[in-house]
Amino acid sequence: MDFKYYLPVNIVFGKGKVNDIGELTRPYGKKALIVTGRSSAIKSGLYDKVKDALSKQGIESVLFNKVSQNPLTTTALEGANEARENGCDVVVALGGGSIMDCAKGIAFMAVNDGDINDYIFNRKVSDKALPLVLVPTTCGTGSEGNCFAVLTNPETGDKKSLRCNSIVAKVSIVDPECMMTMPKKVLASVGFDALCHCMEAYTSNIAQPFTDALCTYGINHIVDSLPYLYKEESPSIELWEKLTVASTIGGMVINTAGVTLAHGMEHPASGLKDIVHGQGLAALTPSVIEATYNGKAATKFEYISKALGGKAAHECSDRVREFLKNIDLDITLSSLGITEGDIPWMSENCLKVAPANLSNTPVDIDVEKIAKIYKAAL
Image (cartoon, rainbow, N blue to C red; front, side, top):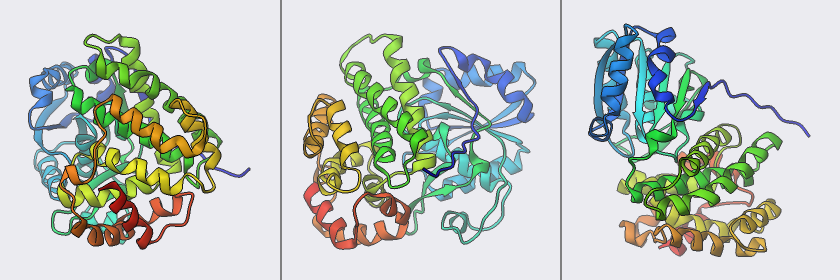
């Protein structure tokens, strides 16, 4: 046994913890760029709550609310310019994974020169960024628990992660109450993304004992909570806590053990068609499992299958499909606008943007296998 585990994130978890954001942000700056989406944080009242809490601690703020789903490298650069022009010395993100990832890109490029794509593709490196305070409002991406910022280059369609420890949050305030305004359709999508993080990190070639323990905990908590949160009109806070903590765990484990083929194949699809990430994963994951369950991680796929009500590894893909049906997410790539004519570009792009994901996958993968799986998922 030989492994390393390092994750310098400060997670503050619990109901109502967002109310402490002023005190928690104060050590890191005097003027915050608050990064949100176009409307949800404002409509829910979270933006005003956070702005007032910062103000009470003497922290000025500037709003940047131009982030969309599948955030763009150009948006991150625009936000970085806003931060510099306004003299912001800390970045506060309120929202789901898109907002948090874009905020990470903003914090990074606010203090670094050149083309962000050079850093994403490791042609340039830096360990500098403005300090980040993250408040997730969806329980899915786990960006609050890792050093990744997934961004799409609108010129090329390349969707790939900026990765460095400088964009790990100084504080991640994970408050289950902040999740409760999500529409059910969003909940299903982000919740399945969290499950995929745990399943993929668990079956990754670079999994290790610490991540395995966290992954199995996360898988069981998501299975025990997501279908009920989706179906019940007034679910308990305990169910929200289960899913929320599992989502953060999902972000933490992929920081160390990475993700595998499903994420590697989804990024070209959403980079090309701007589809919802969790929906893309729902369309791809069963077909990916069918092509990979019988490799080096067969016993782990058996565990996942049993967690979902099955008995053996070969049942895992069918059990995932049943789980997706329970949250109305049993969909295909075709229903998301992907055509057979898109497969050659996506297959080649997968090799370009996701070499680490392919390396993590517990069976050998080449472009022909990728194309075959895309076709099966149509």
